[in-house]
Length: 324
Image (tube, rainbow, N blue to C red; front, side):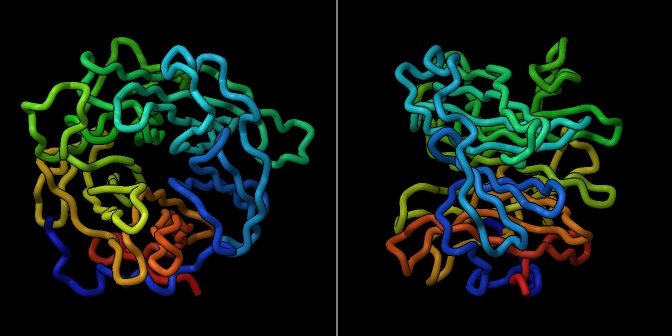
């Protein structure tokens, strides 16, 4: 891995603002009015709200019961839904989400929509739109989890997603955002070397996942997570980044190495206080750019906690600083 040499491009993770010590995995955030809404992995998709990004209130889950279609993908699915993604487009909130069998690419991405994120709004109602993309073992060498919607400079929607196997993917979406556009247009936007002698059904050791695309100036920045999450004290998660003038790539890191050839410049990693940090999202709110992710708290038996930091930019590359 290439670690950035310039010291101001890496900020120590201690000092991050934690939201009442809330436990989250894979946080994404949207703002409606004066309230921030955070969605993350959990039973029926967990949700929290906040006025200040520091104090969070637990809200009802998106789905009280599992979407009806999920058993067709993962038999006897238990409604523990992974890695959502929230976007606002043409007056509607679009919430993509992942269902999967752990460690397999028996997976699919679904979509739910809502006119409001405020549970007290008369228009508040999550409506499931069904499956968007599916991956099948021994058919697909990619994994349909960890979605992220991005619109390019022409207003064309693209969905980035993926983990392990032969890399992270991007597919052009239909204008209704419910399915890939026809004819289908696919790209590999990041990958790492893996043991190709392994069978399709095995993810191998090319540990990367969770692409998040953020447009800033003339570049699209792809943030992604390397190494291993979800192992508590043994987690080795970290976030790297690359950029491209085109939403579909090719993305390169600070040294010019292609992300789809193993490139990635370090943004943040764990230290003596955190066993791993990853699965991030980045947004602009009220004139500032913010980074959200989870980290595994070394002082709390590796429990996953929310991390919020401000993003600053140096010579066209992102860095993180503690919240004031």
